[in-house]
Image (tube, rainbow, N blue to C red; front, side, top):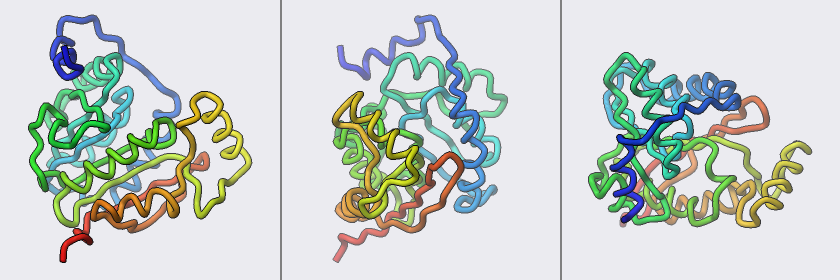
Length: 227
């Protein structure tokens, strides 16, 4: 049985609602950044990659009532947690969480239901530094294929910039991540992620410093590969 097929059987399992203090702290600063780039009356489709517990999507969605939010995860316990949050959410603009492994080709995401150039926004919070490089590659490949022209990719987390990690707490955090898994660690926005983005027709638009030494990074689909 595939992982996607396993996801389809979640309905019969007992759910457990997760609560992460970090998500509770950062959800409002991230929301304020989203509001700078998405009009509160805008219509569209937002694909959230690696949605975690569900705390983020149910905080963001009420502020954009005309946008359909699609949370995703690859961890079964997180999928169940997200759907508990969604079940308690009073509006109808959040879909039930779906299984996505971003290392798979984008035409396999959500069971192959997403069409090229059909997504207005992609949001990814706190994944890039706690996953292997193949996940970053998959994220940008998926954004390049699925986003509409001028569509946004938003990423959030701790990063390196031009070979430098600051402050010291982030240096120590990076060392801790690499000790836990050598394939993890803070990615360099300009030396690693920006070239990867350009390979997929995406450009770095802006960087915004947020509390606790994190950044909200705005990327945009520009079809820079088109001739």
